[in-house]
Amino acid sequence: MAEGLEGPHWGPASGGRPRHLVLLLHGLGADGFDLIDLAPGWGKAVPDALFIAPHGPEPCDLAPYGRQWFSLQDRRPALMRAGVEAAAESLTPAVAAKLRELGLTRRDLALAGFSQGAMTALQFGLHAPDGCAAVIAYSGALLSPPALARPGAAPVLLVHGAADDVVPEAGSRQAEASLRQAGFSVEAVYRPGLGHAIDEVGISLGALALQRALCGGA
Image 1 (cartoon, helix red, strand yellow):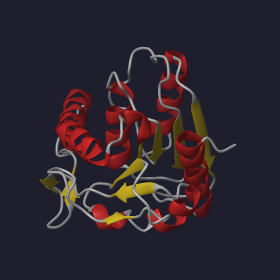
Image 2: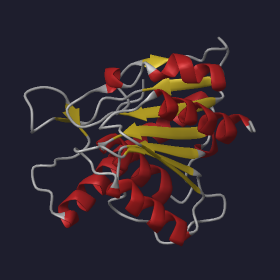
Image 3: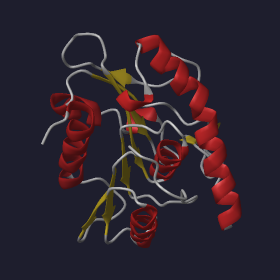
Image 4: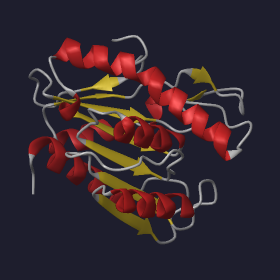
């Protein structure tokens, strides 16, 4: 495993060599094991994908366990933006090394994240010049909005519970508005009654988004 992508991995379901790479980025205070269970179901939609759920780079500083992508001790917007930018930058060499190892490019890469992992996935997937194939963000927010979408920019799926009292639904609403204004292709789904979680509808939408982006599925 490339340094910086330590964590559980699964697939490809096909049993062949990976033709795609899907990163699953966990939320604050969790670790890679929190999201890797998405892989067997999503592997049916993208059977040639290798799924990796890396552990965040830092111990969580708000709990005695778990990992984080960046600190949320101080939630002033400028500091959160700096934190997510540093988190995405720290992922870049490890992801590049893994793609080289697999003989893949950023166009074969998709990212899915939950909560703080969604914030990191949006930052990593939408700001780099070579982008990625798709970004799926559950219960997240866009801390550092990109300027204008480049040609071939990744499509974005935002899914958020309307009853989320940890990261309010407004985070994805604002992300949707900013990304549409910048010219990104965005699908946004707000789930009535859902709190800070991923439900079966969100999981199904994620599988479809991966299939469309990586396999050309309808």
